[in-house]
Picture 1 (cartoon, each protein chain N blue to C red):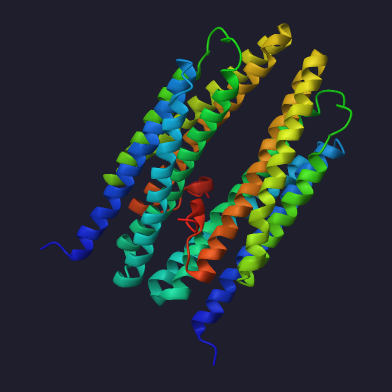
Picture 2 (picture 1 turned 135 degrees about the horizontal axis):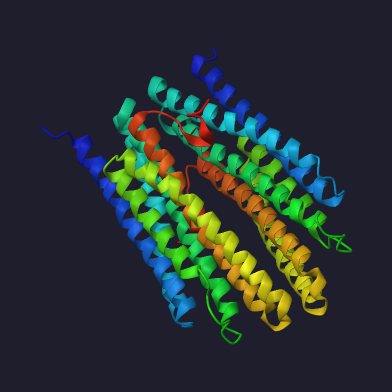
Length: 220
Length: 220
């Protein structure tokens, strides 16, 4: 027989999945605004931010309530503390999408900078990391979590590559400086989103194995 | 008579205070490396990072242990969940100091960019915010927490001012581009540290009043 508590834990997981979907929508909208030079999309990003912020508070309240009422131990306790952390990471993914929209707004004041270089590729990988991190949480899938952790290097490499290409632009043509700066800042926002996905995956490993792999604690 | 649990909670607070002191030292060292053009200090920042990472894992373990063994409710429960969040913020303040050192390392490859503009002033305010945020946590001082929250605008204004001054440099003299970019990124790192201090203060308000003021929930 299913415990009432299990239903509550399922509700908690469902809230986080929904929150991750809104966060993913925010990434899509903010990048779409940049790629398609569409200023209007920023408004939708800000609307989604309200939704994510509401969920952030609700999930926190739910976690505190479950800790107080159900007095969980072992795996249940780890699930709730992981949920509290993942909740924070998702909220910050939303924040970074807002930052992308803000940097895009400045970018769009200028004529297009020819290619957006590897930004779309960087976003694709980052979005996959976010989705996989939440899937690994829901299924308590350590293998998938570790796969996401490995991909962070790809994102960091793309960030460096983008930085150097844009620097070359700026050095060879001063009229590109403002625009190139905006794209450098956007690439940092995307990098931060990928970092949040890896934080989620570290929480998933702890949740599942009861083992803290942050700061390479596994190696020590 | 003091409960054993009260002694454990005091130990938890003490760990976080110590962790904040190491994080503050990291801010000092990383900025000192920038201002005094001293490459050697980065090594000390990386050493402190090891210490902060160790504390990060220890504090988390302590919190989970207290949740499992003491089954706290109400104010005690809020204290432990706040501690878990503050622990994360402090660890990320450490990360940002490492980022400052990394950006400084590139900056130091070039001759000095005349003034560091308002970077020292921005750091001073940010450091005060970090120290005050932890003091507000230890003393459960909502007034101090709210004072810190208000100061975030000062930091954001300085960030914008620094950005525009550096942009002017870059536009008027292309040989400053790389160096100016490094300082722009450092100013973003400092801004993030101030954000972490405000996150701590929001946790302190929730801890003390049982009221969530994040996302301006107070107004709604």
